[in-house]
Length: 211
Image (cartoon, rainbow, N blue to C red; front, side, top):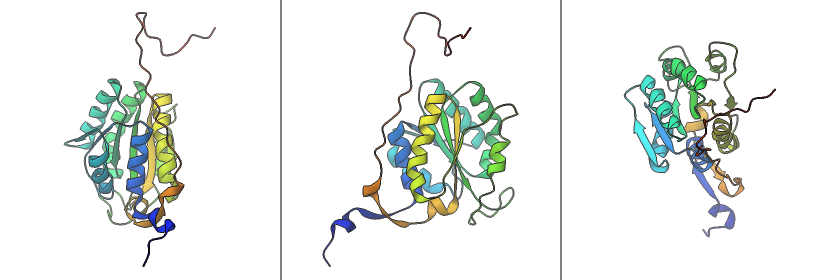
């Protein structure tokens, strides 16, 4: 069987690989996390693509380390599911208050607490709505198909950097674990968003006063 032009641009990949590659190309440079099913594939690809990857001892520490890296000018990413996200909530509020760019990939699974790690679900949107203590909204992007894994992951990183805020990228077990025949030739180019740094001698004012 001879290889065709079409076959050379297709490969069996899952959403985890697209999400990881997209985040890195968009400007994310650190991955920190505590593995949890069904987000584990994201850890596998992260270890190969991010310049820096750290394994945290728990999810609370994960967000604290991410806050430290973001304060130092990096753009950290993590991946978790509901039990881990529940532990991150207080630190997400802190990062939001401090205006720190970061992306939390929330891979949904079925059931309360430890739940059913091998069953998919799409019910965590209500959880994300209640992440902040009130009066503000947490930017949230929801992946609905394999193409979104590429496009919305880059958008999540861009949004985090431009708005200086944590961003939640909501996806599901099926999207990050299911292998699909995918034509990578149709992927759009991703240009990195750079973190702005202040090098002046005057006091740093992130916002201009508006009379």
